[in-house]
Image (cartoon, one colour):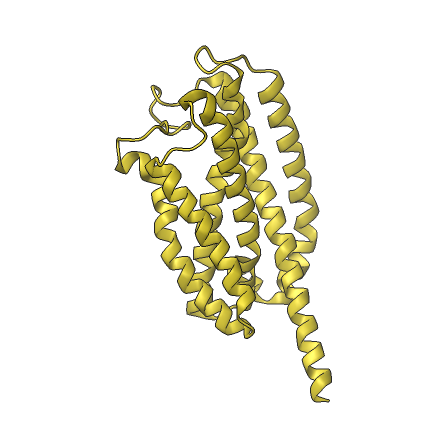
Length: 242
């Protein structure tokens, strides 16, 4: 069996209809378990107090904001190379989800930063690149809506996605590129000195898993909606020609 079979809308709809309830169910279970574990059963940090518990929303949302754009990049490249419509529609479907995660990351970051830094916002390299990524998300969604021809829209948004990927990369590695700025290093690291303590790490992993599953479920759901909308447009076009 080839992965390209799922580029067939009929095959995709059949498989996603079976997978979607399971993915969504696991997402809900993981999020509920991780957030309850993190917010109610972990201690306060000796420096940050209870504010540190924002980590269970901020870190997963920030990770998925960047990874959503990476997913859009991959599906956009598939569209440009192989012209599979499902991949273009999947990229379109992922954009509002990624934007939502980006906004969550920015808001929770401000809530976390204010008591720690004494300010809601700083023109830190990672924060600035993340803000620019947010604008790219908005521009990507607006470009889809502005162009009537779906194939032309898919082509132009794919190019925009390629350009925006630079800022997705900067958002992920800004702390490594620049040693300046208020933003802390990675919360999850192979370096034991930088990685969060195990008491925070385990529930954080559960929350990250929940966010990943939620992203997959929402993208599957929205892609199915986009396919149905494309089919409806094709039927209406045939009726007008008849």
